[in-house]
Amino acid sequence: MPILDNIIVVLYLGGILALGLWAGRGIRNLKEYSVVHRQYPALIIFATLSASFIGGGFSTGNASNVFILGVANIIALWGFSLKELLVATFIAPRVHRFSDCISVGGVMGLDYGRSGQVITGLLGVLVCAGITGAQVGAIGVVFHEFLGISRELGIYIGCGIVIAYTTIGGMRAIVLTDVIQFLLLGIALPLALFLGLRMVGGVSGLQETLPPAHFAVFGENMPPLMLGSLFLSFCVGETLVPPYMQRLLIGRNPRETSEGTLYSGLFSIPFFAITGMIGLVALALAPDLNPNQAMPFVIKTVLPVGLRGLAVAGVVSIVMSSADSFLNAASVSLINDVVTPLRKSALSEKRGLIVAKITTLAVGVLAVVFAMRIENILDILLFSYNFWAPVVLVPLLAVLMGYKASTKTFLVGALCGLTSLILWRWVLGDPGGVDGLVIGVGANLVAFAGMHRIDRSAPVE
Image 1: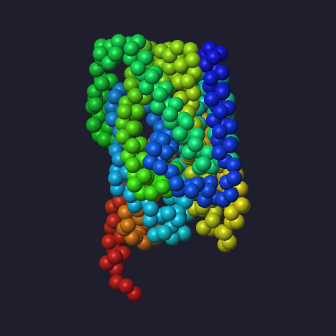
Image 2: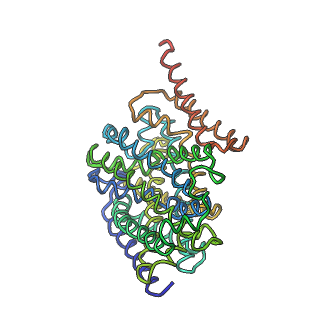
């Protein structure tokens, strides 16, 4: 890549690091580290939430999968968009009732006691580490493709920058850097698609060049059952995971929180189409290309010097903005939902903050392990979902919607959800292409509802 583009990327990375470290001044306790002062308006919620979920999997990973599978992958990702719209409509207006909570586990503990809080905290750490691993892996790919360094070294550099400002600055640094990163990614990738389409002769040029199967909703690449299963997996897989729940807890009021979440869901619909279409442009320009290189290839091919550097910075922004959010959420989940409930005496404010920062470093290392072992970014995301939705989603929605249930009901539902997932995926091998994640969530729902009914009808002793 030309020297000017390299300079732009290096200056951007240095600026983000400095900005994040500066924003972290004066943080005194775990509450400030996790939810700041709960005074953010709708537009900030929109920007930071969007920057958090549009990571490597929904950008470079989406381009890669559309390169292979076609536009059906975009439709599958719209399951996530639907989830955001549902959360904005039914969940966000209710979170003001949990203003004393700073984490998902804290919310769960209100109804399901210490068991519910600790289990949620442990699973929160695992899912956050896995999703952070997906973003860290994407950083490695970006650094390798654009800067010419090895994927492993790129992972170490990118993860090091993210860990540094996330560890020092907490949520305050994350929100500030997220807004900058969101503005950059919102410009860079649409520009790359526009110039790429112009190079291949527009949408009509794509249709003339590519196989018809890549434009089919259903077909050999994505049978109906597989598409429906994948759509539901993206709909439920990341629902209310720790960093997204944190965004609901930092809003100024329920209206601002709901509007910000709604804007984010609406924004994701065209954005997923943009990142997916970049994969089609790459296929039209270079059919023999490694699919994982689809987005980097288009940016390097269609953009002139200078703009290319800004676009690379935008791609880096995407993955960094998601990685920092999940790192912070993992540390908060561990300290607030696992360590604190299991201790006989509470941690002091200062010690709790120190332990949270140390945890951020540890989760960063775990994320690197995920990234080194699994190269496909969307595969890492889908694998990480297994640690969350089949166990936590159903009882969490019950709490948020005001349905009171017992700890026993939570445990029975969680056990059935996890067992069903394991049997369906790793014993039976996902029969019919139906994702075990969907089966696990369904089994949890049935068991949770059944146990809740038994509890309610049981005679009071």
